[in-house]
Amino acid sequence: MSQVTIKRFFRGDRYLWGLIAFFMLISLLSVYSSSVGVAYSSHHGDTFYFLRTQFIMLMLGLLIIVVTHWIPYIKYMQFATIGLGVAIILLIITLFAGVSINQATRWLEIPGIGLRLQTSDLAKVALVIYLARGLTVYQNELRNFSVVTMKLMAPVAVVCALIMSENLSTAAMIFMISMIILFIGRVPFRFLLAYAGLGVAAVILFASLLMIVKKDDNRVQVWKNRIETYFSGEGSADDDYQANQAKIAISTGKLFGKLPGKSTQRNMLPQSNSDFIFAIIVEEYGLFGAMILIMSYLAIMFRGIQIARKCDYAFPALMVLGLTVMIVFQAFLNMLVAVGLFPVTGQTLPLISWGRTSVMVISFSLGAILSVSRVMNARERSEKLSDIEQTDTNAA
Image (cartoon, rainbow, N blue to C red; front, side, top):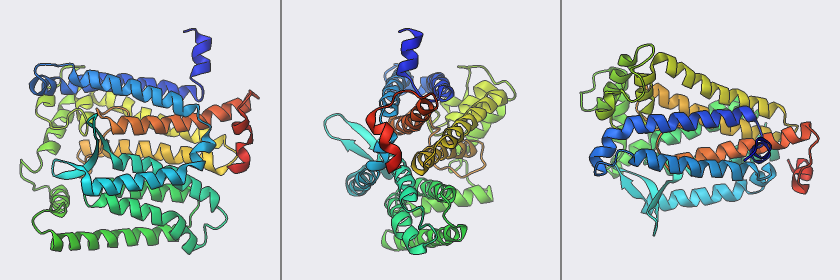
């Protein structure tokens, strides 16, 4: 494939494309290194199991990015409400008929192919795009508390409520991301304070009711133990095992690390290829490698802001900023957990951790961002666009 053909095929922000390629490379190296021992013991000596599955998922993710970045961004606005509705239905199905893993029902299994979807990830991106649409449609009514509450906060509350019983950390993260998006969209700060207060009250009330109704079988005690352990620092070795092993991995990495493939903690650290992969990266690449990774996520944030600044209309700018905040917020939350600055949440490291739904969702998000970038760049260069993209500014 010639260079000209590649440029025509992969449109949009070239720096963002470069960052995507960089993260995919780091993902393959880190997933293989962090999971080779687990793969050998749990997959009949097949040390390439996780590497192979991650490569397949990343290639699928790349296909998703390419397809979605060629979709006119106005389509995301037009189908935002439908997308959120489907996501809510999937959350409800998961709540009653989902697959339970590690005492939490977060996955929906597709019959026939055995593929498990973490529906909260789907709901997260659907909600971000819906909020971008809502902030655009109601941009002249954002000082009306009832309008903001019913049109914007009510969907946030529904999504968080459906997720909260099995995954409080994800519900809290989605709530925080939503608050940031609403703040960027110029919803009055006093409204956001009111919603934050209501959110805290709702969590306390829900936890109290859950402990009464399901005394011996609920997630509240898990939340309580994690929070108490974090703030007291007196958790037992078993309760705090993951965090302790992650700290050991990070502390032994020093400045330049042990070099790729030389990790010793990967065999002791649970979820070393997903939730705690950052600790293995620091162990092997050191503080220097960690800083490069952090700067790369900040670069995604910077490129998102640059793309949004080119937009003349609200929806594409808000969608880009919302999706960028979602990716970077989750990345820093994962890293804070790994270094012991935040209680264990179970969030993966975007673009790097081994996974299925998370890879597809992040890929879709990047494709939507690049869709906006592609159109903005084409307009700057006076290039020909489709009829839909030439007239979408009226709707956006």
